[in-house]
Amino acid sequence: MSSFPSMADASGRTIGAEELAAVSRVLQSGMLSSVWGTEVRALEREMADRHGVSHAVAASSGTAALHLAVAGVAPDPGDEIITSPITDFGTVAPILAQNAVPVFADVDPYTGNLDPAAVAAAIGPRTRAILAVHLFGAAADLRAVAAAAGVPLIEDCAQAWLSRYPDGTLAGTAGAIGCFSLQQWKHITCGDGGLAITDDPVLARRMRLFADKGWPRDDARRHVSLGLNYRMTELAGAVARAQLAKLPGVLADRRRTARRLVDALADLPGVHLPADVDAHAWWLFPVVLDPPLTNHEVAGKLAAAGIPARAGYLQQPLHCAPALTEAPVYGASRFPLTVPPADRLPAYGPGACPVAERMIERTLLVVDWNERYTDAHVDEIAQAVRTAVTS
Image (cartoon, rainbow, N blue to C red):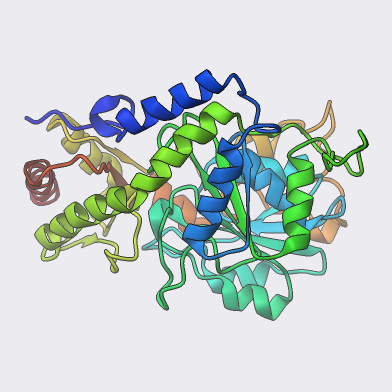
């Protein structure tokens, strides 16, 4: 039984001499704040250049980057933003924080990404944006739906570094704003950090102001709009720069081993795998099972065999989370969830997104993935999956 590299420690991270030199460079400079430093500004330029866009704005986390994006599209209280029920709560928290209402659309049963038809059906008079999540590293193409509705598309690329759409477009560049995470468990990391990219100078300025207390940092100390302190530190920025340079290699390694596992499992009945290996970012390796197979049964067998796999990804889809079904949001109030008219109150709780619920409860299985996996790791996973599914 192999020991699998993990992003929780050095065995599964690409942290090395470059990051040590970056940290030393910042410490020796004595300037750890990005307001007056150079590392974060350089990171923003390098991120924008890598994605072929005009602007990148750094933030203290991926959730903060999403908050910049939601603040950038400027919803009014009670406006709705359509998003996925299968994602981290960091996708939804910024919507609530801007006094907007998350509306969940159902997902494709094999990718877990938003179903364009379900998104189109969820659009209403108060829809202000669509926030697409590129789940596990597969691009969710909501471009046509957003264009038809005339609303901005925000892309949550936290799990989708260097993912591509079928036409080759890089994830994060197809909508109004793309948001990325540098958290410990992502493809590249500085512990916590985020980046938002855009080609729109108006959105870029709004996001930059929101990240720095509405302070333009010109000659006068004045605050021109509401903003928080979401600034990234120079230490985080320097580490992120070193990591960003390693990103293509990380993706190449993940894709190579993912191809090996896809090929090894391609003939296995009742098992559905992602289709386009080279467009996928492979944050996790998702598997969708046909009945009578169940994710909990197969995950249990894999865990017993020492494979880092689990059922469902989440305990429950977000539209069923107590934070949305019953908990207060501000003080004792459920605001902004009580703002819309009665006929437009969002549908939360079981039954609202049945495909997503079925995926979490019965069909979705995820295997941890890592750029440090060897062919031997992949072959062990393949044999364990085959045994778990057929025995």
